[in-house]
Image (tube, rainbow, N blue to C red; front, side, top):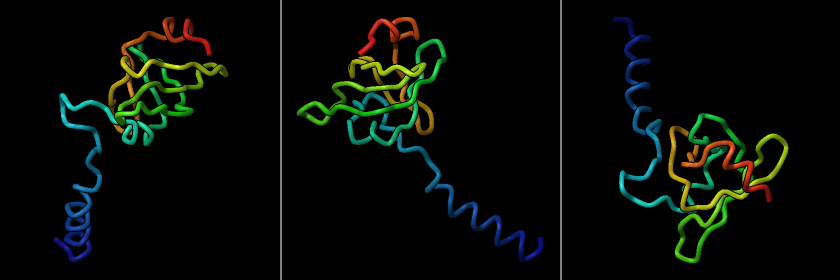
Length: 103
């Protein structure tokens, strides 16, 4: 193994913890602060919407998530939102149910 290869492996190993997801532990409720880091929201049928704003409840939980979907703003109830993969949130609502929530 060359010195460059060894340095590359060492750098990757050192960066691994920093690349880990910031998802809350299973069973832990999603906080508004954590949800604000998300860029996208995925519906239950795999459609994506851009997160516009996260509305925090007085206890720090998510009261609602405003999203832009097909050039329209929709307010998703916080009770249907959870942490998703990478920089995303997910909702238990389908895209048809989201469209019914037109703001």
